[in-house]
Image (cartoon, rainbow, N blue to C red; front, side):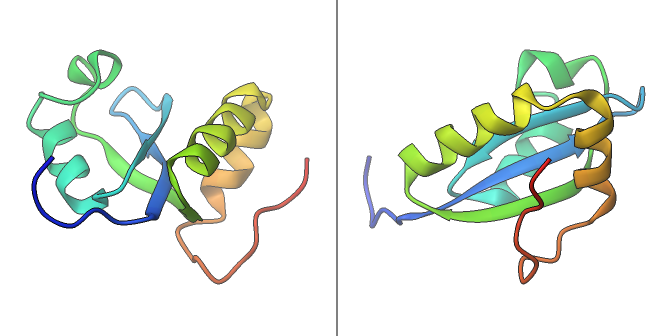
Amino acid sequence: MSGATTNVWFVYMLRCADATLYTGITNRLSTRLTVHNAGRGAKYTRGRLPVELVYRERVAGRSAALHREAEIKRLPTIAKRKLAAGGIDERARRPRY
């Protein structure tokens, strides 16, 4: 991969047009959102466009992002919806469910 790499990664949650939630990771959030909405993102979101960013969490490193993504994906749906309802304020620490 050319160019400088960053240790700042994001775990993000999207609300799809059918009201389902999708969770993923990236180190380039705005680019990733553009790719999702262009229909070239995850297979899950392609048929559920448009998508809207409802949650993001900054983490240090890809490994931490993968770990947190797995934690979020294991949450019950109601807990995921509560997390998404909290918005994208990165100053708030993640709640414990």
